[in-house]
Amino acid sequence: AQSVTQLGSHVSVSEGALVLLRCNYSSSVPPYLFWYVQYPNQGLQLLLKYTSAATLVKGINGFEAEFKKSETSFHLTKPSAHMSDAAEYFCAVSGGNDMRFGAGTRLTVKP
Amino acid sequence: EAGVVQSPRYKIIEKKQPVAFWCNPISGHNTLYWYRQNLGQGPELLIRYENEEAVDDSQLPKDRFSAERLKGVDSTLKIQPAELGDSAVYLCASSLDGTGLDEQFFGPGTRLTVL
Image (cartoon, rainbow over all chains, first blue to last red; front, side, top):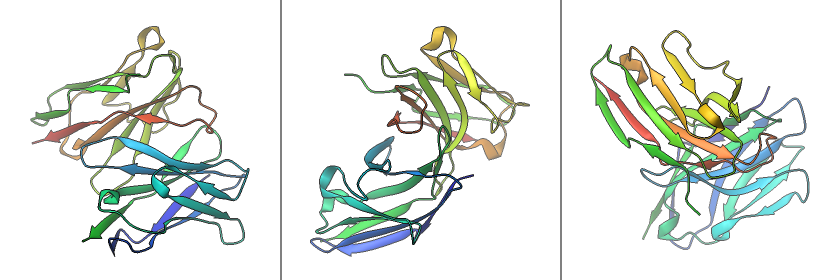
């Protein structure tokens, strides 16, 4: 069975600051890992995914994530936050057909 | 290319009433998912279809929930009767296949409020 834990339900950063959203996973098989973003009143949109190729994955909107097997982590980062990054972010894990989502982290960007 | 379409966007009903949600996936996507998203939580899978076959409905509360995907395209999710605890956002998603590698495309969801 797979699961993810997102550390911190709320993260607040200043515009231009580093964004770091934490995700730890548990999986009995080599995992596929995903980050999705959800803007208010919208569905989820894929930011990036890890599928056992390069451990550093680059996604849309300047986001990237690094798969660290030894730490069972897949943290999401962006060097410089923009006001438009304010949203809910979900980490997800799949061991095949079944995708499990974390509880989400709400990112607030202060001017 | 049109995305995943869901209707209605919002629905308010009294408890014990029936309700239905409709989803039109992206053209050509064989796999369709229904998720429930409670406030402050991530989506939880209710049912997954491969074409018209429900291949994973283990999390669907079958006493009151039902779903269908006729002709392997559009899908309908029904609740009868609705309970207060069913208040949530119901998300539909689709993907080319269900291998787990493939990106899931989500619709905007239906926000259900049960009074």
